[in-house]
Amino acid sequence: MPNRRRFISLLGGGLFGAALITAAIPSTLTSVLAQSAPKKAAPAKGGALETKTINLGYIPILEAAPLVIAQEKGFFAKHGLTDVNITKQASWPSARDNVVLGSAGGGIDGGQWQLPMPQMISNGAISNGKKVPMYILAMLSSQGNGIVASNNVKKADLGLNTKGDGAFFKKFEKEKGRKFRAAYTFPKANQDMWIRYWLAAGGVDPDNNVELLTVPAAETVAGLRNGTMELFSTGDPWPTRAVEEKFGYMVATTANIWRVHPEEFLAVRADWVKKNPKATIALLKGVMEAQQWLDKAGNKEEAAKILSSRKWFNVPAPVLELALRGGYKVGTTAQKETNPAMAPLYWNSSRGVISYPYKSLTLWFLLESIRWKFYPGQLPNVAAAKALNDQVTREDLWKQAAKELGVPAKDIPKGSSRGVEKFFDGVVYDPAKPEAYLNSLKIKR
Image (cartoon, rainbow, N blue to C red; front, top):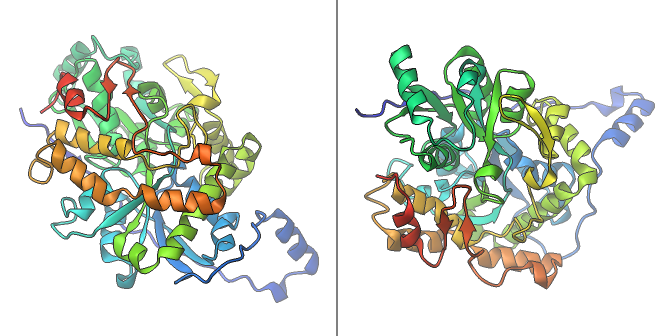
């Protein structure tokens, strides 16, 4: 029976500005405001950039934190980008449409992306055939995502291991007259892939045993509360918020599925990069410094406060700080477990520097696309995936920026592979043998 898919898009959204008339504010209040504002990094010395302006888009989840912090702490300005406009996108489809428009058309130049969105925008697969070449410049973060189930299915006690849960999904469909609904934020990308991998690892077919929905990240908690779906996967703060507000329970974090996994990336239109090579390096430097700042335990509280503002996430700071510190409550008993190694990672990790855009990691999302036959015309085989990945992923620009920033040589990867990756179910992904990885997967199309 064909899988029914529902697309729920969040329309609208706007840009709001306010002018602060300092002359009307007492000097004492002005002083207080100045002291409470995030401290800015000092401007950098060096040659002039081609432009000081770039328009970036973001979705209010923790993967966007490096962009927000680079702006608020002055890291972009430090490197000469004094006119960075970071605008909240109503949804991932909105972000896609806006980058296709480009800033010249009233859209954006780039920003935060799930993969393989930049690759598939580059070849026109998800942009109505319009090819807009993009470059992946850095990985913004690792981990920091969760799979949350509604309390309405608490008796099922869903967990990391879904072996034996096939009977539950069949029973659910028989009793409810519909399939179990699982939501992600954009089809054929990160969150979709996490749900699919998790279910398939236990023998549950995501295309036939459940109904998959697309819901904007900010709508996931409400969807769980009102019964639109039984489960969702997205980035924090939404999984943590759903648990804290007692609308659901954490089935698993993505760190449970794949430790130090690739998450979301910084990607920019190729024409902007080619036109502004110095500004591109400045952009990368600002993001790298923000990632290093975010990784320090002593900065988590301030980061949460910055991100919590109405301007950015509009989410309570305690919820954000809990997620930033890895304070997850996993399972139906909501047993609290604070483990920084399972939290969102921005720079350091057991697998090296997070920020580096390893081609072996960006390729994985294309391999999963082949696994599920998402783009049979555009990605018919591994060779096509490799060619597209090599075209879009720019490790060289990251290395240049890292060297100019003074990143220690030992922290700058020398190759394009992070090495062999292992998933929670024992499956191994060896980037040198991508076909073997695909052949090892039991459920695929």
